[in-house]
Length: 449
Ligand SMILES: C[S@@+](CC[C@H](N)C(=O)[O-])C[C@H]1O[C@@H](n2cnc3c(N)ncnc32)[C@H](O)[C@@H]1O
Image (cartoon, rainbow, N blue to C red; front, side, top):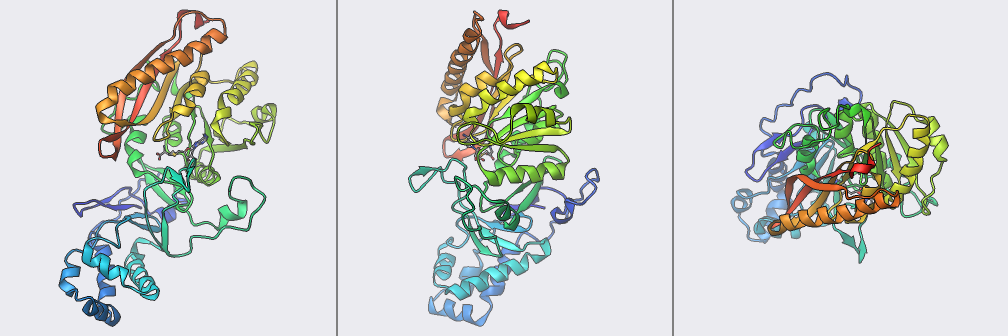
């Protein structure tokens, strides 16, 4: 269950079921919203309880802050991703009087404040409290490729410590790490369950709109083409496959699966996200296979063994590794599956990386079915004054990249590339919008067989 406070201090139940019981529940049972009554001030209640104790009162006197001054403008905003209470980055430093009070607390007093807040939220099954922070694009001078939430600060509850180095490379978690970690969950888009370990994997609430669009729902309903029989030239969504180059915990993978595509081939660097995606598949009852991609681009299995061992229930294959190997590996898989007449053409490639997904455009153009073409969904942060320019740039570059795919196969002519929709997903920063460009790629005449 999620309650999200917005700036107008109203509370919205973001999904409707009790997250604690949902893993074992009947998946088709309609979820009943929990009553959000009187939750609006839950955070303030917890803080007020703490302010009423004698040591807080004497600190307020010491700082010459009248109790009423501080209580009339206490922070209100919070999100619950069961069982985690997530507070915004400024929860303990604004407004100024509250900030000065928090700064003067001893470590023991701080922990008693967090206890008091956690106690208020017990009835929402909260056991952990943390302060959120925006995802840093780089840490200590290095790109934060896995978009790890390095700024998240645990305040209350056991978030799980990591085991001693296990011999795994690149800081990937061991099985024991995965089991000991603290996991949270949420339900979005009418029942899609998602899981993540908040210390190790980001979760972006704002993507819910794009997830709904893929599902054919929400405010941009009908703008996502390529999953209906008409745009698939009479084929069904269950005849096609999708590639998600940045699968994360399944943000968009799950929407494609719920929409009925046969299989999603996903790529993901972060072992924590791969485990979140696996847990999500299990809870949503989609079969999931995980294949490790080694540093040199080889798999931890053979292509033949992977193909032979795949069943129709394996709706997701996640390649745990770098997507720069995606086109080569999928070409080998396609060859083996085509020989067995079990290959489903890749008609959509999802490129969900911000600020830019450009590093994978070339691979996306190679992967998209070359006889029928399809759609590439390009996520970019865009200067709102330059959206059209960005669109033209993407079309031009995709045309060139796709042209070389055909010329390598000896097929003359130019592919037709256009942008059928630009989705404005969310504001990333002032004047910067997270946009998705739906790029339709049609083959040149000679590519049809
Ligand atoms: C921004 S997250 C995607 C989440 C989703 N689009 C969202 O905004 O909520 C991007 C994901 O791509 C993964 N990633 C980044 N570069 C990658 C690469 N070269 N190969 C595979 N995965 C990659 C990161 O580990 C991360 O989980």
